[in-house]
Length: 384
Image 1 (cartoon, rainbow, N blue to C red):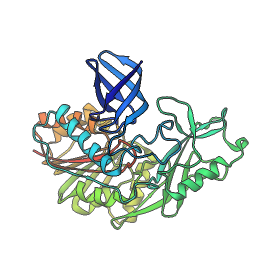
Image 2: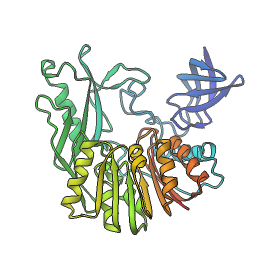
Image 3: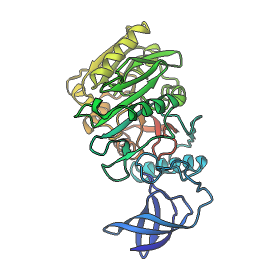
Image 4: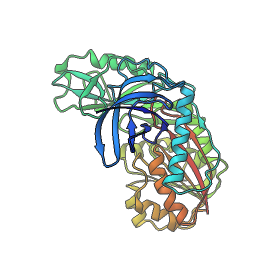
């Protein structure tokens, strides 16, 4: 079934919103203001999910996507928008989630800080491997088929070079069980996990705001180095005191600067490789006032006995914080909480619980760590 629609705005998750025949229409890869002929792919209740058949009248903010894989590759879904429109859409997504899900009546003013690099910025990626089809790239949109990508426009040049080397490797050298390859860059090379052929899991380093972070492809690290300093500055702001918690702490991106501001820090990270690097990073920084715990944050809260805590920072994965973690934070009653999130919807869900527990949203800001995609990093400060 085909329809003619006009896209009103971009929703959280990146779909365009339109209406037709009394039904709500979600349109993939749209721009606000587009007039389109769309094909309905799926109907769910009163909602139609559609793809673009023809752009009848393009939005003023629509541009020609430069990537030849756009629309098929499941990676980037905002290449059709000017960069200014991408930032505006992300700000609107955050406001929408905070109003609709968190039920916040007064959302503080904020801006989405743009990335200095809008292309060739990614220092981390996961490449999917299909041995049967002999393809290397990313999953196609809405499927588990691998889109064979020779040149990824958002990869840093050093990662793009390594992608080309992986693609040129004899398929007999690929382990039979290899289905995906995690890669990350640093100031001293590129690391792979798992390692094979000439691609090893080497240790890397990156300096941010004077702190040196060691890591490899087995440990999570943010993908856009150009905004990490600004992200840390806003997240920590003027926080100081006796004791801080760093939850989902990774290799210590926030742990090290927290340890310079507080008398003692407890950092909790489930990934053993990341926790191991965090301990080394603290040691190399000559910081001995931090206790690094390798455990899930939920398990740690179940057994933790905490005295007064002044500041809590949490940076959970896209799924957000578990209910037990939010309940643990409410039990601790720290005066200040900073929530760093890569998903506005799960952030809003968790903020609703924190606000119901007595916290007030004091300030927020957002950082475009993910240009050309609908993803955005949001940082919220709360106080009792």
